[in-house]
Length: 238
Image (cartoon, rainbow, N blue to C red; front, side):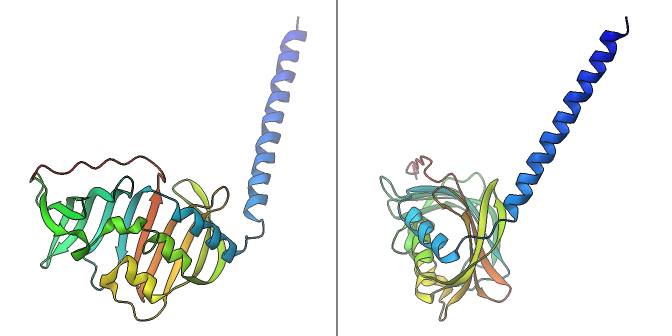
């Protein structure tokens, strides 16, 4: 009469031990992966440059730390595309005429910047985006993120980090002044700028995050996700 209960307890213990062994094995593999030698930084940058040049859309979160001269944006959250035409839309925290404005809606359509600085107001045309800040230029192969990577010098892989749930390798280096000024002309860099790129550790080595530090304590960080996701931006009625 006691055989079945004893057998059941033994079976349960066997299952628990097996589960513990499986968990321990998985933990060991994860730890081993984190201790793997880092890949070559220059190779990662080169492969990520090729991938980034071919991208046509992305979700961008941009933040500034400290004060970046000439850049009125403190935070931006938006979708960008360059196919079938350059376009962007989202919200931003900006400073206009000394006044800080939060969650201002914006759109870039037909090369013009549309924005509503007051919540609830319709978007109005502010003229050519390039005259203010052309956020959609970030996807340009010639002056955007791909160009930043193409002009990344002295790359060194320094660690592994998870960005937006993606395993990445952190690569440090410098970016030429010309490349920095191409993506953000208002910065007016005159010398190479310290930079960090977080690159997906496997697959196509997509760029997941980039940071530029034009001066000590003052930087711009761009976090990227949803590469290749379809983005549709309708022209505002205003």
